[in-house]
Image (cartoon, rainbow, N blue to C red; front, side, top):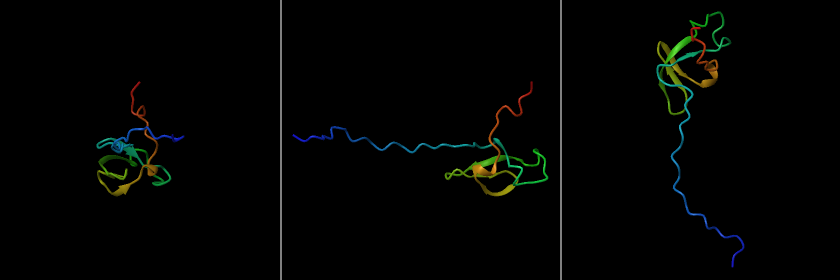
Length: 81
């Protein structure tokens, strides 16, 4: 009788979970350190496409950009009181 028995059933591998920090058409703002001398409105762009690697493509701005290039998402920023 073995001391350590493996009675666990083999599980199917789960589908990889896609954690997305951005979605198409949402607005993101570059950090001020990346675009010095520009206002928040000049640093804000809309997401065109989210790549499988987590980077985003923006409307009216060339290239792919990673999450670290943007300010943290604040959903209450544009909320009117």
